[in-house]
Image (tube, rainbow, N blue to C red; front, side):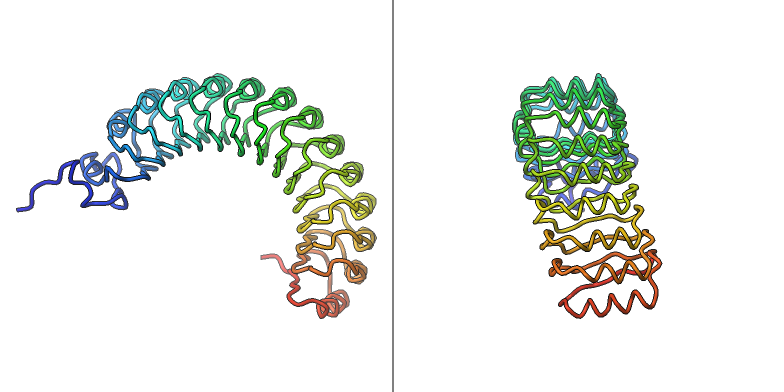
Length: 395
């Protein structure tokens, strides 16, 4: 009869054998842990505070990545994790979906061992301003590069607390989407002067509005920002103008402004920008831009590296497409999305008059009321390209 394997014999099992959950017993899980493992994936195991006590007791000195997302432990479990002193090489921790709440976040932040931590995912853990304050007060995680706080409710106060942090000088990715942050929070966040390496900022589905966009645009320290996500933030025309006027974000490459009630004035404000020389993708899906706004966008001579332009579900008609096709500067454009606009055959015939977009590979034309006449013009236009595709149909 084979003797029972002990924790010391775990090389026999391997990390991939860890498939059990709390209901099936921690004994099996423990036997499956490899003490030399660098990654430990224990997500959605229904672990509560008691189970986390056992996990935190694991002596895995080479552990680099720990995934505990989707479990059910709370503030006590967070404190137990924070007290661990053996995972000195830990670089990545994911506890997203665990309901640790404000006190749990503060408990986690008492950790003084994980000096190499570079990625912390704490999405949807039900923390508010106090929890954000606790995390921001930690000075041990000076190597933090990625912080994912999406789906919480830190609000204006939490944004303000985060902004006071001056130890995360290596932070390059910050996700604050869906956090009930308003204009006051944006103004406070913009005051941060320590995150000079910030490259990606996700503020999707917050309560920013025009005033919040203006406050955010006052930032003067994020000179390395490359990706800005403001989808669903209702920044409107004035907000778009404010963002475009920021003189610091000269490295922006990806700008997401979907669902923002931006009209012709906002488009004109964006088009007036002279700093985004590296702009690669501009997402303007589901706004209210018409011919006047498109004319201004097409006249921009700075975005010569633009690869993708998404104008789907705006107010483009054949006149707007004619204005768009007059552009001469987007010589690197490869993907043009015009779905959901009333372009019609006349617009298709105007679109093919453009002579500058010689690298086009895809044009989205779903639900645009283009029929046989317009398609004939498009297919004739297609012959000038090696691999140009049209997308006509909705699925």
